[in-house]
Image 1 (spheres, rainbow, N blue to C red):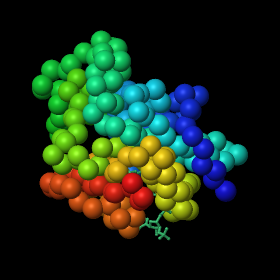
Image 2 (cartoon, rainbow, N blue to C red):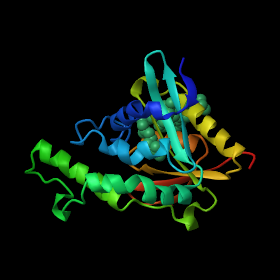
Image 3 (cartoon, helix red, strand yellow):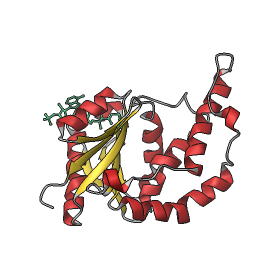
Image 4 (tube, protein in one colour):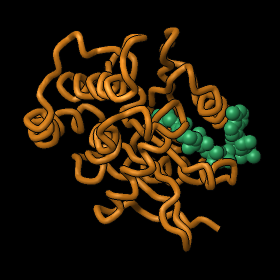
Length: 214
Ligand code: ACO
């Protein structure tokens, strides 16, 4: 049985691994990216130290099998990241040339993976920010990822409950997230749990959930 507990800085290596193994619309992205740490730098690492950030992990005797990570106040978190998280990464990963943006049919697998890295590097140089007009009632945001061995066992619901319980105790009224339209399993999960659509385009859905009792 997976136990849910608060995430700590010591979980960082496990969270980076899980982030990579679920980063391809829920599937393993180990072959998709050349640099195995990049996706964790963007979607996992900052939540272990960031302003108003917190999270929980699902773990058993075999180790950490999943996490939920997020921030209670997205604008505060974004300001913190601009100050304390992105600058070091921007030095380590200089902004790539525009022509490295996408792979082409003639690319080798390695250069295609580097082109996928380039998209993430561009993201850390210009991270998207929450639009208060769309997310004002849902100031928190989250990311949730479980390894295949932990999926479908109720752990996803328990992690969302732990996260929204913490938001309720902090008086935060709602949480939003972005999910790829190419990840219908996750979209179905969120809708089943009551998330509503805040914005939708062919590639991405922005969903929001009010926090009970706030
Ligand atoms: N459609 C409808 N209902 C669903 C679906 C679905 N596709 N998936 C799950 N459910 C329901 C379950 O039946 C269950 O219902 P119940 O509690 O009423 O009986 C409930 O949702 C909870 O299901 P869990 O078993 O807790 O779901 P799971 O543990 O698999 O977690 C998750 C879902 C987080 C999407 C997991 O499968 C996962 O990590 N997938 C890979 C990574 C991923 O895609 N992450 C999302 C990225 S987007 C982002 O982080 C913002």
